[in-house]
Image (tube, rainbow, N blue to C red; front, side, top):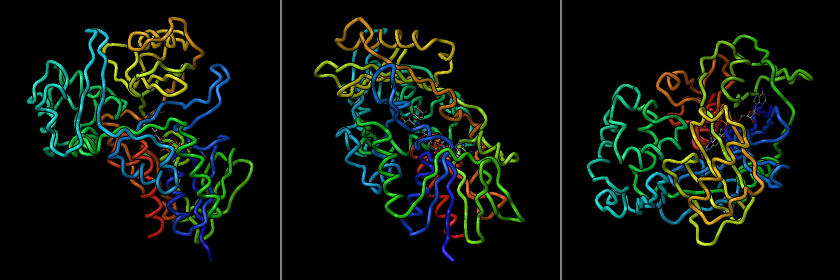
Length: 414
Ligand SMILES: Cc1cc2nc3c(=O)[nH]c(=O)nc-3n(C[C@H](O)[C@H](O)[C@H](O)COP(=O)(O)OP(=O)(O)OC[C@H]3O[C@@H](n4cnc5c(N)ncnc54)[C@H](O)[C@@H]3O)c2cc1C
């Protein structure tokens, strides 16, 4: 009898599981609650700004091998723009100065020893604090393992780690910080080249993945929100979508690839992260002035990163819970002030949109990290996936894609 795997959730974890399984010749059915796939990594037409926008500008690094492998597999690498060098220009709005962190291409961290390639007012030894992290130690807040003060921390480590963890780094899990450092800076500049998706997230990640699945006979159902699993002994035997119940045959299996709060409503006894951090993104419809860098780190501003695309300027604020009380209008104006400080743009706001994702990622703290479940559940044909499962990484595309592939491998061997 042929086998069907039902994938619940059409975010990147679900799509990664489906693509992996479809590539092995397994029949896949993706059930997505909303009317589009992509989850927290999606694009949509926005009437206010008159643009197709992403819920948030996403960045990958060249060291994100699973995410880039996924894009290669679905034929989407041409939709990704990878920088040739691991260079991160910064503008410090308080001190009115610009400088560039240039990690080079080699494995050795020679940049630390060259003052033109590291942050101002820092010495090579300031960065060696990161080496202390490499010693095994129980998971704890980063501030328990190294000093979270000083120019090297404030200008380099904090901005890079905040972007990767979406959590104030001093309170973040040292295990997750170690994983980020191990997958990037510790491997040298070659692993740190930033990659952007200038044509949008859905164009790069979602549409090619859906085409890959359809070409292999995969089925996608939208507006299918799983309410409950029917179980018998150690197996799931049915999926209750409210309007219909889909039987799960003896050979069949299920990947639950929904966010943690949705997973807990389906499996109430599941332990999962329950604290989240917000991300704010602003998009401005304007052609940027010539000569700007594609991506600029901002210190001492409202925005943390400003991205200059061909047809728009976007800005990101991570760990943005403190801004949730501001109106979108206030945020657009505050962020536009930052853009004006770093680029030659008019004072008047261009058409804009601000996207506030309140539960953008789980809080990457030690206590939340300890609540992440593995792939296995009490039911042998039900596997878990999602950026919040125990991948050892913070909630990122890399984590989501790896979790999906892991769920697929688990089910192939169960
Ligand atoms: C604003 C923002 C910026 C980000 N920036 C970056 C970045 O720069 N780099 C990076 O690597 N990562 C970034 N991330 C994180 C990245 O987007 C996520 O890690 C990744 O998209 C999570 O994928 P997922 O499949 O695990 O979860 P989700 O994307 O949440 O997918 C879950 C899917 O399940 C569906 N669903 C929920 N309940 C049900 C149900 N009961 N039945 C059926 N379907 C259901 C949802 O609708 C959703 O489509 C960012 C996230 C946000 C929000």
